[in-house]
Image 1 (cartoon, one colour):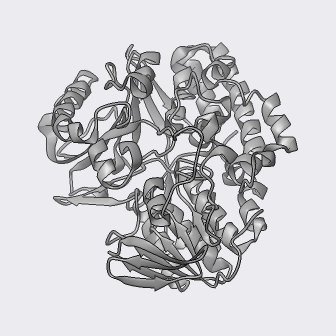
Image 2 (cartoon, one colour):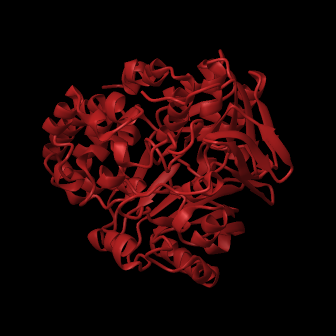
Image 3 (tube, helix red, strand yellow):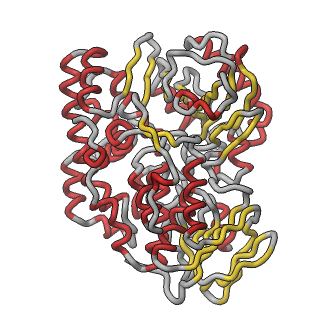
Amino acid sequence: MKAVTGRTDHVVVVGAGLAGLSAALHLLCAGRRVTIVERDPLPGGRAGRIERDGYRFDSGPTVLTMPHLLEEAFAAVGQEMSRRLTLRPLHPAYHARFADGSSLDVHTGAQAMEAEIERFAGGREAAGYRCLRQWLHELYRAQMGRFIDTNFDSPFSLLNPDLVKLAALGGFGRLQPKIGQFLSDERLQRVFSFQALYAGVPPARALAAYAVIAYMDTIAGVYFPEGGMHAVPTAMSQAAADAGATLLYGQTATRLERVGDRITAVVTDRGRVPCDAVVLTPDLPVAYHLLGGRPRRPVALRHSPSAVVLHVGTDRTWPELAHHTILFGAAWKQTFKELTRTGALMSDPSLLVTRPTATDPALAPPGKHTHYVLAPCPNTTVGPSAVRWTYLGPRYRDTLLRELERRGLTGFEDAIDTEVLVTPADWAARGHAAGTPFSVAHTFPQTGPFRPRNLVRGTANAVLAGCGTTPGVGVPTVLISGRLAAARITGLPGATRRSAARPLPEEKKGNPA
């Protein structure tokens, strides 16, 4: 594994999001002095917090999986996660509702999920699910240590025994047809393939290897932190501070000072912070701007679809909503064509509705409720520009409310106390390329060793972390990216293998099998 050369005693981490905080904790573990520079007044980055009229909304991710990665980050500085953060497992992990009126609870326990599938689609599909579950286990084992939790130095890093295992498992085929080998019911196929959208690729075109995300969601388990998702970066930042890190909030990095190929200081709008090495976690265009240039690639980077998010505080809720509810539309292939090719808004949308107060009522005033409505939409390179979204946003908000009413959430608009609408224009204003918080899509030329590298050419002591670099998008992978960045600085590759050596998450937690 290639590593930063020269002195690395003092590391400045730009960004106190999940990737930056993960990097900081693992750097502190290796004895480095760490300073974190964050433009916002609080930690979190994408996992931020919006407070409005007594309601607390998580501004970023709402799904937390693979909590053992968080445990490792806290353990790096000798702390127990449970002393700072309370995670509640969600049962069911999701509730799925379909256009034909049918519905399905998605359980992480094998027996519970088999019984639910048998009720929903019959014994043959339940038997298929058992085979699918075993395949997902094997896929996870083949991928985690060698393809996700690893620093690639070249494409030749792929040449290892697990590559043969992954190929034998069909990991280089297409996701949706592979899921179809186990499940013939099209509705069930959606439940185990929609996760490809997290990676920015339609299920029909995504590599089957990305079913590992379905493993994380539907087998390893989904959790929710007491206090909301923002409680995670809050706890991580407190742990870093207690371990000796300096956190500078409300300071925006404006440029990097360098001597030759070494970064010598991070300059902010409020001062100068000398460093021996730097970890950059902003979205790639911001990071490359600070570095003074972008790497040459034969083909321009493709970005994932974006999302419109409507945060709503209401005076009532709807009993059919679980903590996470997926409202599938009738269209499927057409939806992905609109999102990734034609740039049109979904003509028959599939929506994620999250109700955090189902698990933590303290996130709203007494007797009130919070709802998070996510509607995937094209990014600004294939769909409406950020400028157009400024005008389109309010109209699309009305469209979403009508759609929720049509899907059975009667009286939704009348129940609204307060709301916050977030569109691609807002993501673009935060510095997210193509107006998407999901960064670079996981197409094959942008995956593994072909993804923008975390070790920056042209500098001897700068490393990237976050969803734009290795290993990619999602809370678990972003936490790993911070640890991989720390390993590049410390030169300790063993630190990057801890999660791969552990038991599978469900084996550790003792979920029913």
